[in-house]
Amino acid sequence: MPPGILTLAADKATLSPANTGFMLICSALVMVMTPGLAFFYGGMVRVKSVLNMLMMSFISLGIVTILWILYGFGLAFGTDKGGFIGWDGHFAGLSGIGLTELWGTSTIPVYVFAVFQLMFAIITPALISGALADRVKFTAWALFIALWVTVVYFPVAHWVWGEGGWLFELKVIDFAGGTAVHINAGAAALAAILVVGKRIGFKKDPMRPHSLPLVMLGAGLLWFGWFGFNAGSWLGNDDGIGAVAFINTQVATAAAMLGWLVYEKLRHGSFTTLGAASGAVAGLVAITPACGAVSPLGAIAVGAIAGVLCAMAVNLKYKFGYDDSLDVIGVHLVGGVAGSLLVGLFATGGVQSKAKGLFYGGGFDQLGRQAVGVVCVLLYSLVVSYVLAKAIDLVMGFRIGEDEEVAGIDQAAHAETAYDFTGAGGGHLGRRGPALGEALTKKVEA
Amino acid sequence: MKLITAVIKPHRLDEVKDALQAFGVHGLTITEASGYGRQHGHTEVYRGAEYTVDLVPKIRIEVLVEDADAEELTDVIVKAARTGKIGDGKVWSIPVDDAVRVRTGERGPDAL
Image (cartoon, rainbow over all chains, first blue to last red; front, top):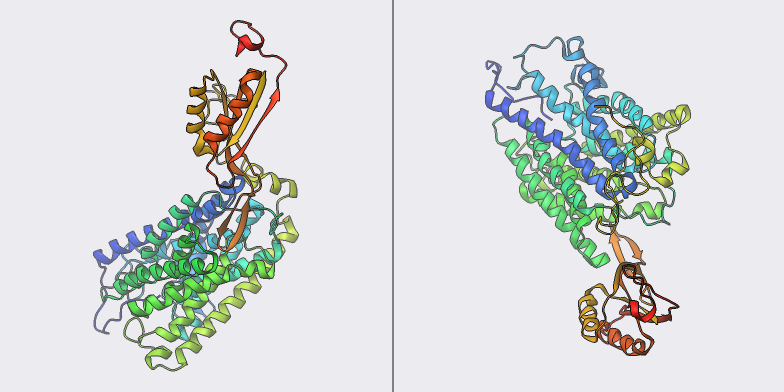
């Protein structure tokens, strides 16, 4: 993420209405990714826990928004403190920011940058939830989100994108969040499932997705919103790089979907819907760090490699016996690592950064920088997330009760069920009014 | 009297219904059912994880007939339901002690 357009010393950036409008739209696009993710995940779980899955993503919109305004934006993007964290008193509560105060050397208001970045902070912890489907206490999860963004996401966002952040200074290329978002969330997912453990019946009971149409709806919304995620990450500066990012996002996603589908056709015999949706998401993840650094042909390579790699990686959970319910590690961690490292191979040097990848005559220099970014973010997130999850587990218990898990977390955690099946057989079997066996226990007073 | 029960492939329902009508059967009961015979369901793949789906959708047809018609009617159903492929289903009959038409109170063969 660039601090802003490079201007000559004599030029003073002025507010651009076009860029401001574009960035407000991009922010809204990134926002829709979180409900999109909720549907993507929600369709993959069983009927008895779909509402909880939706809520685990949705709650992030509530919690992270408030924390971001109070202190998150300041920690991530305030004045650098030692390369590790930022802080600015007047960012707290967004209270000291002028309406037309510009972000850095960019042409958009600080408020717009803050709200755009907020949407990234919201979706990142939501990504983790897919690994924990069906089995964690909602209160424990909410607490985990609040703590995790505070001690993991905000600092890592500062490292990668904040002026003075140590990975930013090391010139690690992460256009829109390969390390800060996807590796970060994927590593946290791994840490959390090491603490929480497997679902009851993992590898024994069938845990088929209950609604692949929902998965496709979610994947479609993610793909759509991702244009804001990636193309917006150049902050609307009108030098064409945002447009390259947009094209690369589309191209890599297409290639990854095809890559995943071809792999599974050869390996398992069918082109599946879930494979198409998963391949698309894997491509979106992988191109995220790279979309400002590679050419459209490079994006095809990044997408295709990531599609096949992630399709192979999702089987690891059965091999190693850890229950990453919805393959957050296989898709986001592996896809993020692949995309971040492939920047070191495919960066053309002619777009976002002058740094060239191995295949464009840049040698191993950028690949090495990318590897440092990958390993450091992965390890930091893994260790700190493990400590957080363990602490929550010790203090309040991270998991729901065994009986509640078997009966379905929706009823236990939310006192709701997603679908009404009482009219089974077409509905004509039930009597009018409350279905058989159902009684109105409390009338709502008018 | 006999109760003939047939478990058949859903897409053969119309043929069986037509054949029963042509035979002169006055009424029947149809239920959506699921189960498996020798074919033991099918396999589905989700992100490489294979699931065996045991229970296959079926239609269960029940017809009450007089003893004299039972054997021939069984043949009629078998003929109409047969595709020759695995999973075509089964037909069986059991004796019935009595039957009552709820509206009139008629009993036995008169109730059919």
